[in-house]
Image 1 (cartoon, rainbow, N blue to C red):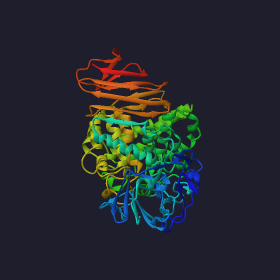
Image 2 (image 1 turned 90 degrees about the horizontal axis):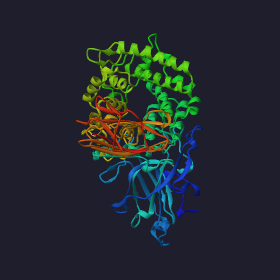
Image 3 (image 1 turned 180 degrees about the horizontal axis):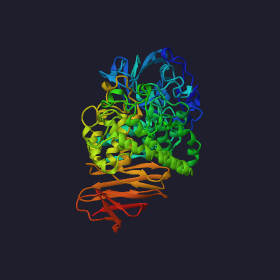
Image 4 (image 1 turned 180 degrees about the vertical axis):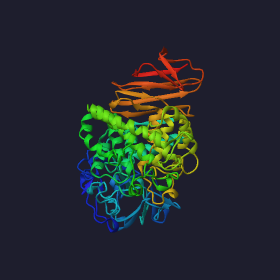
Length: 612
């Protein structure tokens, strides 16, 4: 059977026999990944990609580069598949070649023994007159339930950038090889953009943005290739970055429903489900979807562990097995675990705040008031028992004086720190540097951006050394890693979306675009400039694209373009000597608070704004 010039054959050796129907090879075809579970609503599709380069590395051995890592498999065959001529006596008609898939190179060849969970796979194929589908053998750990499964008819998919073809007669050319990469079918590459005066920061954004696209292959948000499982914290962080690139909620919702059916073990991961539901409501404004899941969300508040003072308690077994703080364990900044854990309680308090808002959105006013009252009482105990007024820091828990990075970054990010204490705490956190994992970095940087430390937050993203996204970029990563470096997590994988935080942090805080009301009827545009002099970009919303460009010189100028049906509250970072704000050349009512100018009225449409 010939399909678009490709001839499909069985694989020999590692790959077993693979039969693929005509419909599975249509370029950019959307296929519902029904294996992910009955709740699956998002679609993924196969995209055929040509190599960015091919070079001969040894006699009969060719290294094929696809430019970036993607999850997929390969089509390989003679030039006639793309309209070229063939020689019926050509040696390739009976040749068996070895195909090696890799995420890493070593000495200019595919690394066949990469570290940790970095991927290498191998298959053998007998090349006939047409194209063959080449896929590696299934990995038992991530291709059987409860892993998120891809359709069997696609063949096994694996993450790879490079392919090494060994034993190929003659020359291997770009018209003889294609990668069949799997992505979310609703993703549009240029729906989001980010460009700034810092070239490295732009590379960091691009790394994070592409990481989200590349890891949508399973139809739900998974934790990389080692397990292909959905985890609550991974899913929430991915959801934030996904919305910055694609406003379609289906994949996030499919992940949420999957996690309701298959919850995972860490204590703080349960409240992340409330965060996911709240993020969906803010993105879509859809209370119908929320109403069907509201009662189940109550089970994610850790209520069964709440003591008389409203704080969550931890038994020795829960401390040992569930309370996670950060991951891997040595990224916890020496955290001292006690029976009342500051990080666990920070999550509990934030979840109560968001549950109150969700209850109110559903018209459950009594329950909203109850959640708010519980949060108020627990908040009082939290401040009284966990805050050290002498140092101005939060302790790790009741019974210890140790004050880790984590015991302070989470309260700051969750808005639990009283206003008069935030600036000092943010300054302390900025001075500590990146003393947590790529997971904790999401919350650390949120707290810094929101509390006057935007220059420090940006500097941490692009810092020299091995604990920043600059290190990933400089190391040649094309999908974010699970940890800052191999030495910090020897079994890490190189395709982990929870490391892609800049994909949401830069649009939300530096471009400055966030939803203020559910469904984006009202947005906030508040650029946190740091040391940057210019930024431009756009991001999708359910109402359409929002575009922002700004420059900071002697004055601060900004142009915004909002879709129909959206208005925006605008705040500008104050420049020295500015005495007011002009919109479209006319002075408008605005007031100065600290380091910000806030317009007294919302804006709509396309407008130019300037401080003078």
